[in-house]
Image 1 (cartoon, rainbow, N blue to C red):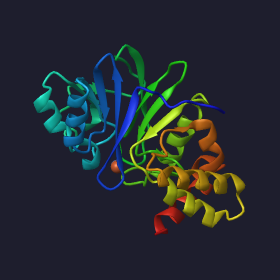
Image 2: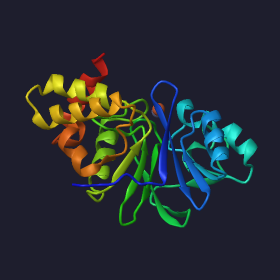
Image 3: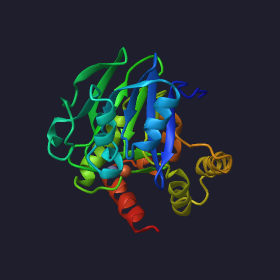
Image 4: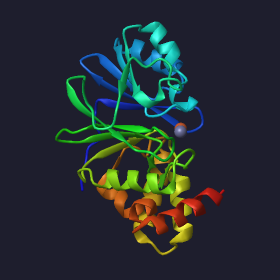
Length: 246
Ligand code: ZN
Ligand code: FE
């Protein structure tokens, strides 16, 4: 399936492997999971944009760390986060729940709760002609989030929920983990040609200093062992196996 990356969404690589996504429309910017603030402020200033909103998928510091400083600079910016996390995501002024729909930059954005990595993780789904999903740490290319607070069952259901979205959904996750994930997958399935091809493609992109994200749901379902898992048992085996992989 052919696809074009959304031209108005750019990724800033920060820290060791985090990616902060900036979604821009008519000079207004929405930032997703700002782990840090300096590169975000620099990018927004250089382009004469202004910050409209911050979307938070979950409370981990490598997702909310920059928020405090960004709202100091743009006090009118909305901070949108799960209503269950008023304490752990302190600067939220729009608190959302599963299934709720918001209008952000003129687009309909649906909140999808995807539990497992934390007890309140949410994703932001833009249901347009070319659907877009900001998934945080629930799904990575070739992998999925570690289960810190939830259960295997919750994480498995979250992945099932993602799989039920339109196949042409473009997925933006918060970490560039793709290569290591595929190496793990290939170790388990050494003859899998789809995974082999994907690893080559990913190595090429990384050697050119490009991001391997976003990725297309349809393609991801072919190479991601967690999405390919046929039942909770298989998923649990994979997740436990991956946790032990160094
Ligand atoms: Zn996290
Ligand atoms: Fe993270």
